Length: 471
Image (tube, rainbow, N blue to C red):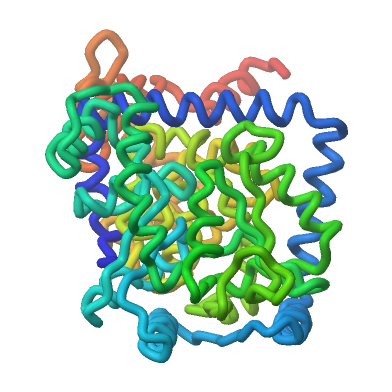
């Protein structure tokens, strides 16, 4: 996926004026926020559960190398194969190599943010392979030649009316906005593909080291169809998804589903520990797990390691006032919202995503919603500081801050600048308010007034008070 994160301001401006997008975002994020609040409210000891989940993720990140080795040992004991991809290209090449090795022609895919990150679909199509997305949202995105705009809800940016029009055009159905009818049409289209596919590709919500198990949670059942029906199954999983044991999975899955969809548990929780054995009724003949690094190891060694604790629930997106207004595409890469504003600069380079750390009011809603209590606002502030240290700030702002620092460090300059501001602001004020500040300051008065500076500063009033013998 092409990186357009530096176009955030322009993209966000367009998004804010897109009435259809605003309608879709209002519907989708509202349901997400309310669902999470209701789901967490009914959880026993929710605060303690959250604390325990955070501890399990941080512990797993600390022990990641050992846990990956443990997973590989357990998984290979059951006949599976574990491979490691250093970057996106290496990951795509491994999948293509597996496909060629097994004579694959058609591939069905479950939802996977990791493969969005690597651009796997395009790589497979360029290699002459047919790829069908089977998650309903991802399927809509694929046939519309679009990209997902949310970690959990890929088409949160689309209305039912838009999906209906798309299905009328692409699937030849009768016009309808009934979600059940639209889902039924997609299911009918996918059924033959499930039965005729040579390979299934999924992501993985968690990789349990203790048992060598990949776990995926879905509501549509397509994850099981992709992993059980084709003769070859490949799971592409970020290395940060490894966790220590089944107890940790039991904790994390409760928070993942409640935070993502408001459910106590999704309709399907599918756990896979290798290819089918003789006694198994179904399952693939061959199963591969590809652990994707793509910069994660580097991030783990920095002060931003906590960002890797994310369990991809999307709660921070739903609750973020910026995301609620601009949607996911404005962020310009795979991961949108508050967590994307942290992860994208770390993965693609801060100079390739310079506006994203500023795409936040720092209200803290994301941290409050995060099921593992990631301190996203603090990391956004650190990234802003990194941009300053790298010199990636406009010269006018750098000059203004340096001038402000000099003035604040010198009493005479401080008082003189205050007096000048008082005289100038009162000279152009109307009814004591400034309505049209010049230059960059005009960004404030576009939407609100700015009060003129007082005729006398606090220092002047205090000196007069002392001269008059008052304390």
